[in-house]
Length: 332
Length: 307
Image (cartoon, rainbow over the protein chains, first blue to last red):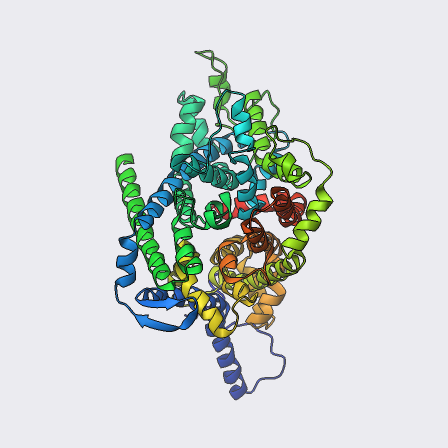
């Protein structure tokens, strides 16, 4: 552990420490032991708060969820747990509503993530040019990020409203009839995806922009010396250099779309929103979990849904990893 | 990153440029760099204006709807400029949704989370960046791994725990689970890796400062710019947090977002009043954003790239 090279780490005996008092040998040993303890223990003390909080409010509940999922627990009597084994899991797996929620979560995830990241990539490319008032544009694009889920969902609820909605009014100029956006399976999923895209595109744009600015100039110069057009430079220099960042945003967006709750809840609001639509046409897994636990008051099945979400996440992670590996192989 | 060369010379540092640039075989001029050295054309500005308007319009329309009556908002030809009903709606929203208490609660929750996050994340970030201890790499990986766990996976037992401790429906139940953030630890570590030279710490040790003293007199001053950014990001996030607060709190003791959700869930809500509530909950953050937008943008961009 202890090194005396000043440039490596910050521990070990410091040869030139000024002593405030004349040192007796015994005193010195005691002092340096104190120092060594300070050096050994301090880093652990500094990182302890994170692990304590995460352990108490993250990891422990995560494991405990699995235990609750094997019991009957009612909202009305939280302290009574009755063992039901796999009952909750078979209940939700046989519930067609659960599979609707899985499908919706997946569909909304795809139709919100893919366009969002593509728009973000294009925008980042534009922002990477020399611009007048570049900071202004970046700030404007990021504004939706500062808007809460609730506010955003409620404004867009008015945009997508069937009677007197803004979108239907605009589409009316093109001769389209009144669409009841929230009623259709696809149209409601698109509406929710639009809210997600609106809120997160700017954020992802800035992440891409930062990555683009880190690409060394000489790569572009070499490419243009070889006669690559702007588009070819974008295709063959920018995109490969951004690959890790793109993977990162895909992971973040995927985890985010697993969590969709506020958008579907407030698209129509009230009891309809809490069911994810009259026909559950835009019910997501989070809504399903909320409905079971907080509307119907059955926490056992709600915990089982949470574990089902964990399994889905692991599946998605595995697919992501395989795709990434495949892409690396084909690139090589 | 951008060079300060005049428009006519995209890049004057390369000798080879002259050799190639003098004999254009095709009509295309020599163009190094996709972007960066180049000025945006009219198309880029047009696209940015469109996207900018799309980003701002929903917020503008929140104001329009909040200042009208419901009948006007839901008219077949919706209004596009604000009306004169704003204060009636604000008053109605204030009464219906318990907004006074909600604002106080939100300020308490966001401030305490922000202060705690800054303190703990700076300490942990410093330890991970500049101190060597057994298991450092593995523990940092563990911190980053926690980012991938959605809150949905733990809300059921969390709810039971909170009512067990007696925090059911209390602000503590929203504050404590988010006292330290993995993102914050990572963010501070990335910053301190670059910004804090070992020599500075060594100098402190030479003067006989113990570890805490070094944190106080050396690390904190160096970390201040990053703490500003992390503070703003944390504040925005905790202000807007919806899922867990919505499950944990109730109408008697809500945060702004919870109050807003409840307001829209009321029986046949008046849309213009709901929008007034949305305006109140968004406005403070927008003000923060207008003032500190530049720093927030810089913070997201600096946190994005691995140092």
